[in-house]
Each structure stands twice: as structure tokens, then as C-alpha cells.
Length: 504
Image 1: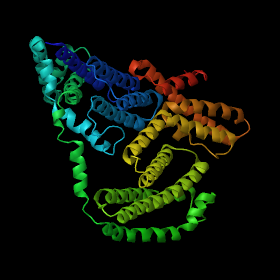
Image 2: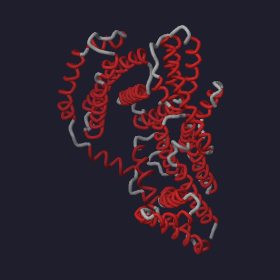
Image 3: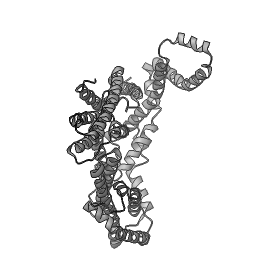
Image 4: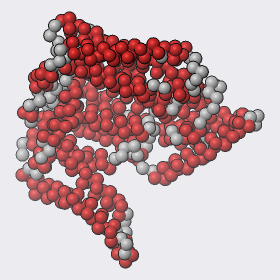
């Protein structure tokens, strides 16, 4: 077995080990440190193998690797389950693209409008093209006797898991049977099942990881989907004349103009900070928001249709279509700016929540995307799609790494203390998890100073005390578990804050 084969065999075993590590750490929202260390391990192991193979990793792949590892910090920095799930998806997609691009498989060098197809190939074509190579590499001559048998045994165990559990549950009605089983398995039977399930799932996950690596390095003949293939396909679908776009979009633009005229007073109210008499702050902020999302999506589809399906032959027609795209961008930006102004009014009155931050983030993303699309109509060198992808990734990374729950709690408590917020929802703060504990402790100290002179403060203090007692109990239970993999910065800061109150 030559050096190349040895390296592949070692990495295949690494893929199995990494897959097992991933399955044991899943879901990463419950084991944040495990998710962070897994990201470092999978990128580190793959980079080491590529360097041993003397593959020169391009700068774009290195940037994606660094970005993915930095993004994975959100596992231990943030206390938000939704963002942790998004971070997991982002890091796994980033890894697929890293392996794919590091081995020179990109359809086009540099920033490319074909980036979408690069991602599709990296995630859904390359890994599955070489799935069987995982077993071939592990079962080479010098390792065949041990490796092949071990893998066959693992596959058998994986197949047996579900029927074994079903039979066990069906027979568990009998007390004598369960007593004998308890005597045989005096250890934790659920832990054994957990390990067997993890090992069984590690095989397809390991196959996926190694399949992506093998195809990227060796089977580049899969490139039936080449740059020319996609470009020719895009050229073939441009069959509609420019006049079709104009006649199809004119009625929509007319409706927009009428709508803006009819809603003018509400737009003015949003920018001046004056609430219309017939609305509450909540109703005013929500009014039209979901319609805005739908309209933004429809407008983007219209612009994509103009870009993908309309012919570009005459120069005047091409310019007219670009202007048409810009008009749709401008109309959408006007809607976004209005919705943002209304949401800012709502936040000033009632403070922050997760949904309000998500809404603000979403509108910021849409606005920047439409600005890039509008600029791309007249700046030929601007690669709109990859720039938009970069914007979304960077803004998501910023949101994930910001400890959003802690920011919400700190903002609301600080504003309540300085008097700019009339009240604070203690239950909502408690639901923000460990990240809100330092702010709750700060609020408790503030209320203790005012409780003697203010009945409202006394009632609120009781709510805060109860919330902190519950959080203390939860953190104590976590501490009893003492799992290395469950470490997170919000939990650490929560314990530190509670120690100051002599609760912990």
C-alpha cells in the first residue's frame, strides 16, 4: 500500500471518528462546546490531509474555512437555540464548499455568478458520487481482514437497532422478563442503545464526508456539470422578448404607485415618529410587515425572471430592462424603509424581543440585497449573487456571535433603569435563558434600592427573585451533570452573577 493509499485510509478512519464525534454531540444546542470542537476537528483534519497531499489551498477556500470556524464560536457564545441550529447548518455547508473549492473544483475562479451551482455540486453531487469509496479504502488488502469484518458487524448492528427496540418494548409488559433484563444489563441500558445508534449513524455520515473528499480530489470526471454546461443552459432559457417584460410588469408598477399614494400619511408617520390615532404601536408595526415580505419575494422573482428569461439582444432593450429592475428595487426599498421606521417606533415604546430583532435583521438583509441588485444593473464588474451571499453570511455571523439573548435582556433592563422604558417583562427575560441572568441580577439590585419606597418595584422585585431562584435551580442541575461538552459562556456568566447574590 503506497503513501497515497495510506493517507486515504487514515483519513477515511478519521471521517468515521469525526462522524461518531458529531453523532455523540448532536444536537449541538445541548452540547455547545462539543459543536465548537467538532468544527475545529473536521476542518483541522481535512486541512492536514490536503497539506500532506501537497494540494495548494486557494485563498477563497481558506477564507471559507476561517469564516466557518469563527462562526462556530456562536455555539459557546450564544444562548439562542434557533441561531445555534443555523450556525450548525452554516458550518456544515461551509465545510462542504471548503473541500470542494480547496481541491480546485470551482466552476469559475474568483467571485462567480455560478456560486449557487458550486454549492449544489459540493453538497448534493460530489459526496454521493463516491460513497462506496469509503468502504473500498477501509477494506484495502493490508487492512481487509479486520476492517471489512468490523464494518460489516457495525452495519448489522445498525440494521438490528429498530427491530430489537420494538421487540424489547413489546415484551416489556412481562415483569419476569424485565427483571431478568435488569439483572443482565445492570448498567444503563439506554446508554448502550445511544452508543449503538451513534455508531450506526456514523457510517453514512462518514461515507458522506469521505465521498465529498474523494470526488473532490480524484473523480473530477463527474464534471458533466461544467461552467459551459450551466452558461449554455442559462442562454437557452432566455427566450422571452423585452416587450413581454414591459407589458407584464406595467400593471404591477401601476398598483405600486397607487398604493404609495394611498399610504402616504402612514409613511410620513413612521419617519416622524408620530403614531396614527387609529393604531396601537404593535398593530402599526405589524401592519403590512408580512405583506412586505411577500412583496419583496415577488419582486425578487420578477427581477430574476427579467435576468434569466428575457433576451438581451438590442442595446436599448437591455438598458430598458435594467431600468425596470432598478425601479422594482427602489419600490421595495421604500417599503422596507417604512417598515423599519415603524418597527423602530415599536422598539422604542416596548423594548426588544427575539422576533423584533429577527424582523430588523431580515429587513436589513433584504435592503442590502436589493441595493446590490440595483447597483449590479449598471456596474458590470459587480458580481451580485456572490456579494449577496457574502452579505447574508456576514450578517448572520454577526447576529449569531452577538449573544442576542444577552443583548435583548441588557437593552430592556438598562432602559427600564434609566426610565425610558415603562415596564419590563420578567417572564420574557427568564425565557431568554442563561444569557439573561446577569441582567436580571442587575435589575434585582436596582429594585432592592427602590422597593422600600415603591410598591410597584416591590412586586416586580418578587417576580425577579422568583425567576432568579428558578434559574439558580436549573444551573445547579446543569452543574451536577458536570458535562465538559455542555460548557457555554452564557452559562458561565450566569453562574458568576448568581454567586454575587449568594444563591449559587
